[in-house]
Each structure stands twice: as C-alpha cells, then as structure tokens.
Length: 261
Ligand SMILES: Nc1ncnc2c1ncn2[C@@H]1O[C@H](COP(=O)(O)OP(=O)(O)OP(=O)(O)O)[C@@H](O)[C@H]1O
Ligand SMILES: [Mg+2]
Image (tube, rainbow, N blue to C red; front, side, top):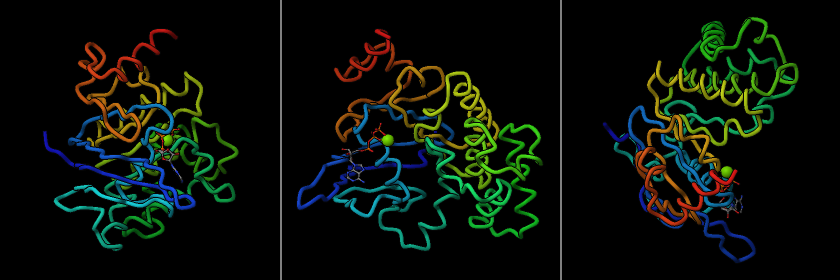
C-alpha cells in the first residue's frame, strides 16, 4: 500500500509565561492509502495536537520546533498559505467531538453544508445545494430535504454528527481526521455513526485517522493502531498484533484497563 502521509520527528511546544509545554516530542507516524489508523492515548498525550498539526490549524501559542509532514511529496509545514488552504477541508477533512458547537446555530443545515462546499470547491450555489443534499443522503440522514431546512438545535446529537460527516466527505477528501467523533454520543448512536463512517470509507476509499482515548472502541475496525504517550508514539502496528501481543508497557496498561471494565 502507498503512504499518503508521513509525519517525521514532529516537535511542538506551547509557550506559556516563558515556559514551554512540550506537547509533541518527536512524533513519527505514517498513514497509508485507504486505511483506518487509530491514534490512541490518554488525555493530554498529544493526539489532538498531532491531528491539527497536519494542516497547521494549531492554536496561535503552538510553536513547531522541528519535523516534517509529508503529503503528496511536499512538506506541509513549509507550504505557503495558498497551498495549505487548498488542502484544508479538501484533501484533508476533519470531524470533531462537538458537532453542535462546530455548526452555526442561526444558519439552516443546508446553507451551512452548501457554503462549506462552495468554500472548498468551485461550484455555483445551485450545484453546491445539490451536492449538499447528496452528501446528507450518503451520510444516511433520512428525509434529507427536511434536514436541509432545519437548524442544528432541532436535530439530535447523532444527526448533527452525521451532518458534520456529510460536510467532511462532500469534498471527497483523501484523509479524514476524526478526533473523538463519537465521544459525546450514547453507545448505540456511537456504533451507528461509526458504522456509517466505515461504509462511507468503503465506498470512497479515503483514509481515516481515528483519534480516541478509548482503545476498546477501535479494536473492531482499525487496521492499524498507534499508541501515544507523553508526546510520542510508543508503539504502532497491525491492530490484531497490538491487542494480541502488546510490546510497550503503556500499551499493556491500556489493554489491562479495558479488561478491568
Ligand atoms: N492551546 C493550548 N495551550 C497550551 N497547551 C496546550 C494547548 N493545547 C494542548 N496543549 C497541551 O498539549 C498537550 C497535548 O494536548 P492534546 O490536546 O493534543 O492532548 P489529547 O491527547 O488530545 O488529550 P484529550 O484526550 O484530552 O483530547 C497537553 O499537555 C496539553 O496541555
Ligand atoms: Mg484531544
């Protein structure tokens, strides 16, 4: 399989009152075409910072100290504003935990999805509207026409999360970064939303970087798992191998904590 993304020796610090918080301390991570790579680790281990660094949507206090993010033969950390803007939301799309918070409460869903399509693709308003409707249908939202006219507060958490997925896949990305996309949902809705995400990946063959603190969640669907601990990837490998014979003590700890529940 081909690599679509290579993160090499990435170091990121946050400056706070002349002190540096070392968020990433030499992250090495490869993502292959069409794969589901789970990035798993405890809170504060650096998962979100890793995901955001890929298209440089980091908070202003973040400092990239060292490293490379290679995508399509180019280091995105050195790419100019026009190039990086073309990649954001198009080749590389994101979904986050709080769908409702990422959506605008005073705009109807259809307009938001259509505007996001117009922002990333060269489409007329009418074309964008049709593509939005199509994306909502793909994300298995029933009665998509009525959803287009609804506002975020009129939809359930699971439906809003499907809207976010629809928005992300409308651009036909090569990589979808899903950062705790189902943490705010209850368990039944969580497995439905993940099921739909997996179906969409089958259909459109994008890669997924699935970020979660919950190792047990990814056991069934991740092809590979990378374990993150204190700003480093301490172990990575085929999902089956990680669960059957973990090597790093921290991976064992995470697996033990699942079994204890
Ligand atoms: N805006 C920020 N300012 C200062 N420090 C930050 C900021 N964002 C993250 N950090 C620090 O960077 C480190 C990594 O944070 P990150 O958010 O990537 O963790 P995470 O693994 O995603 O955790 P969680 O599971 O809680 O989402 C932590 O030490 C965190 O405190
Ligand atoms: Mg996080």
